Length: 285
Image (cartoon, rainbow, N blue to C red; front, side):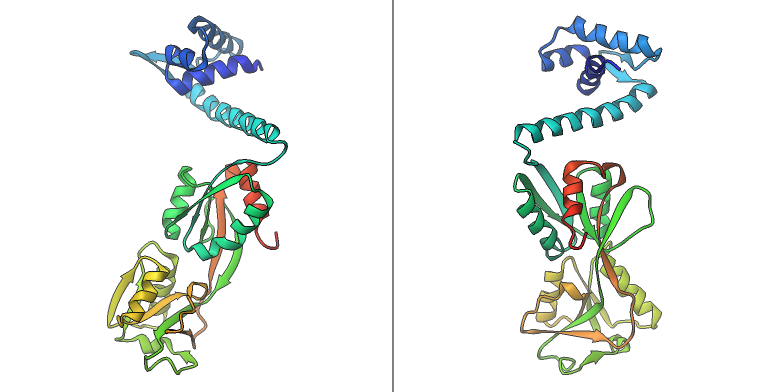
């Protein structure tokens, strides 16, 4: 395949027309037109069609555009690597349902790949998975695993669902808390879309427990603050406990299913350098 012709097609498709593509690349419009014409002629396929003042992709053009975008992105990545003397560079957009979950991986990444800049975005598992799938995040940590072919999962750790109570609470002296003690009691739970919320609802339903009042909080910090304010008993994953001396963590007497944290990325991005670098920084990988 003639990569010059493919690059011309990619330029026109990216900029929506020959004039804009030629201006952006510093080339003559007839030159771009001829390269695209020869590419279409060589394979007997129409890749672009004119719609008004713009060029639109045919179905074959759309499929080729996906491949060409990956190809030239990899070429750019290779140039960055070679130009940096072998030091991997780039920008990582990393999502997590709690920053504490990301610390071991990102610490190792910063040590091994100092040329990668990192942006951390927090959210619940549902929002992070959606962002990874649509490409606005490169990777993320979520507490919900397979099924689904779009995402690749690497298991990180598992944690129990626990109760958090104020140190002044009558529950604070207990060694373990019976889940049925939450019947008619005020509780504090994570927001809808959080896997901790799903685990909480599942546990309560399994034992037929109906709390007296439910306060919803959108982060582990908000759960802790609500407990300190006297709004009720907080329910979080064990690793989300802050070890504040005013708070007490209580395991449940019942054997509840654990919450497992996963590192996720899009399956079709497994070969990208930054994605592979982050996966390689998973402890024990």
